[in-house]
Amino acid sequence: MTLLQLPQTFLLEKEAMHTASEIANQPVLWKQTAEKLFLVSAALEDFLQKAYGEINNIVLTGAGTSAFIGLSLQGSFFTATGKLTRAVATTDIVSHPSHYFSEHDIPLMISFARSGNSPESIAAVGLADQFSKKCYHLIVTCSEEGALAKVRSNNPTRVFVLPETANDKSLAMTGSYSSMLLTGLLLAHLPQKDFCRKQLRLVCASAGKILNEEIEKIQQLAETNFERAVFLGSGPLSGTATEAALKLQELTDGRIICKSDSFLGFRHGPKAVIDGTTLVVYFFNSNPYVRKYENDLLHAMKNGQSARYQFGISERETKSKQLDAQVFYNPDTDDIAEDFLPLCSIVPAQLLAFFKSLQLGLMPDAPSASGSISRVVEGVNIYPVTN
Image 1 (cartoon, one colour):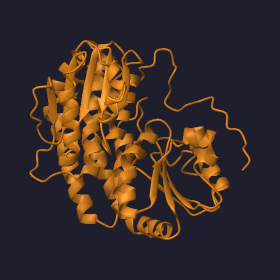
Image 2 (tube, helix red, strand yellow):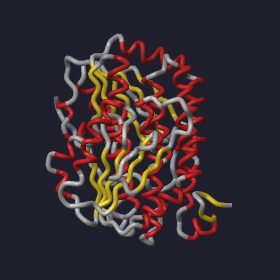
Image 3 (cartoon, one colour):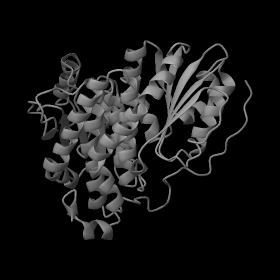
C-alpha cells in the first residue's frame, strides 16, 4: 500500500502516516462533510435566517490555523448577507474584547476549532456574550467531545460537528482545516444547494488531480535548496497564503522561515525579503480583474534580487516565463467559483510542507523536536475583564 506515492512501511518508520493519510483523504472527507451538513441544512438555514434578521455584523473566529479560515470566508459572507464581516482570531478577542464587541451591537460569531479545547476558543464565546447586546453563536468543530462543542451560552447557539475523520491526529491541521473551510463556504451559500453540489464536484476532482498527477513535481520542489518561503494570495486566497506559510513553518520545525502577503501588498516593502535562498509560491486567482494585478507583480519580480525558485498554483495553466514550475488543477471544463479556489489551492502547499519535512529528516506527524508547538496549545491563562 502507498500513500502520496510513498510505501506505508516508510511512512510508519518516519512517523508520517497520519499526515499523509489526512492530506490524501481530503476529497473523501469533503464529500462526507457536505453530506452531513446537507442532512441538517434546514435547521442551519433556519438558525442563520433568524440571525441575519437581527444581527448587524459577523465575526469569523478561531485560533491559529482555524483563524485563517475566516480570512478566506469573510468576502463570501459579506457578499451573501450584506453584513459587515470580519475575520478576528480568538487570540485577539481575548486580549481586546472591547475592540470587537459592544453593548449596542448584535453579532453572529462563527467559531472554528479542530479539538475545541483551546482556552481562547471557550473564552471568546463568553466575552462575546459579556460585551455584546446579544450574540448568535454558530460553532463549527471537529470534535463533539471538545469543550467548545459543549459550551453553554444564554444566547442562541447552534453546533455543527464534522465527521470524526476530520479530527486530525497529526500535529498540523490539514483535513480539519480544509473541511471546516468547506463547511463555512457551504454555510455562506446554503440556499444555493445545486451551486454547492456543483462546486463540491469540481473541487474534489481538482484535489484528486493534484494528488494523482502532481506529486512528483511537488516532491522535486521540496528537494530544492531554499531557506525562506513567501506565499502570495489575494482575496479569498489571502487566507490560503497565510495557512500555507504556517504549514511549511510548522512541519519544518521553523527551519524554513515563511511569510505571506497579498500580491499588491508585497510591493510595499516586504519584497525586500527576496534573496537567492527564497522560494516564492503564487496562488493565482481565476478572476480576470484580479489576475491583472497578479501578473503585474509577477513581471515586477524580475527587478531586484532574484528568488531561488518561483512556483505557481492556479485553476488553469498560467503562461509565464517567470515561473520555474506550476500546478494547475481543474480537469473540468466548468470553472470553480472564486470563493471555492482556496480548497484546491491549499493541497499543493500541504504536500510541499509534508515532503520538505521528510527531506529535512523530520517526522511530519510530530515535527517539533523541542516541543515548542503542540496539537492543542497549553499554558494559556484566561483573566477576568470588565466592560
